[in-house]
Image 1: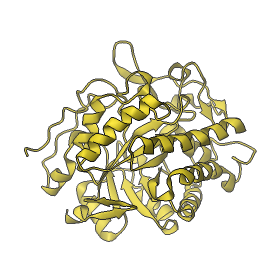
Image 2: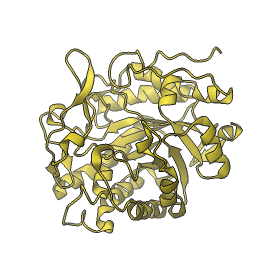
Image 3: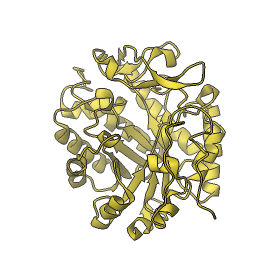
Image 4: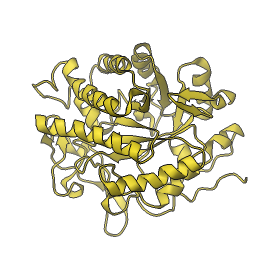
Length: 366
C-alpha cells in the first residue's frame, strides 16, 4: 500500500497521503441548517486523511435535497463550520467544502413551501428522484419529490451568485477550498443532461449551451478564491436522480476540457453506479476525462485499498477517495497502512439521527 502514503502537493497544500475522505451526506444539521456540534468530532476523527471533503452543503435555501443537510449561506452556518475547520486544522488536517444544489431533486416540504428549481421543469419521473427527510419520530426516510419549477434567467443568475457567495463563505469559515457537487443527478448534472435540460435559450440545446451553467459558476468562484482552491466532482454515467445522457462521452470529454482550460485544481471522478454492485464503468469514465484534463484526478466508487494502490502506481489517479469505508473507520489511513483489520459498516445512522453510526466507530489503540 506504500503508493497511497506518498506525499502529494495539491495546489498550495501538502498532503501526507493519497487517502481522501469522500463527500457523504450525513444529515445532522441543527436549526437553521447549522452544522451540529457532533460534526466537529466527525470531521476531527478523520483528520488523518490527506484531504477531507465535506458532505454536500447547500448554497441557498432552495437547494436542499436531504433535510438537515448543512448550509453555507448564513452567518450562523459560517460560524458552525468554523468550529469544524478549527478542529481539523488543530489535528493537522486539510478540508474542502462540497458546494451543493439539488435542483429538481427536492420537495416543497423541506424547501419552506417553495417548489424545487430545475433547468426545464421536467416532472414526469418524480418517483425516480431521491429526496429524504426526518419524521417527527426521529426516523430519517425517503419522502415524495414534488414538481419542480423551470428556472428563469434571473433564477439562474441568482444561483450562480449563490455558488460565488458560498465559496466566499466557505473560505471565511476556514476551508482550504471548495468542490462543486456536479454529480449524482443534482443541478449541475441536470444542466449537462440533454434528457433533463430541454431549454431553448443560452443554457440549453447545444453542448456548448448545456455546459454554460457549469462554466459560469466555475468562472464566478475562480474570480473570488482562485482556481487553485476549486475542484469539481463528476459522475458522467450516474443513474441516480435520472439526469441521464445518451452521449455522456461527448458531454463529459468537453466538460473536462473546459475545466482544464479554466485551470481548476482537480476533477473528482465518481462511478456512482457502483454503490450497491460493481458497475465495471470506471475504465470508460477514465477515458472520458483523463485525456482531456491536465489537472489532478481523484478516483471514487467501488475502489478498495488494493485497487487504489494499483490506480496510483499506474498513474491513473493521483488521489483516491473512500466513502463507506471511511464512515466505519475514522482512522482509515492507519488501518490501510497496517493492512486492516477494518470495522464493519453498520446500517444504522447513515443519514440523520444521533451519534450512533456517526462518531461512535472505534479507532485503533494509540
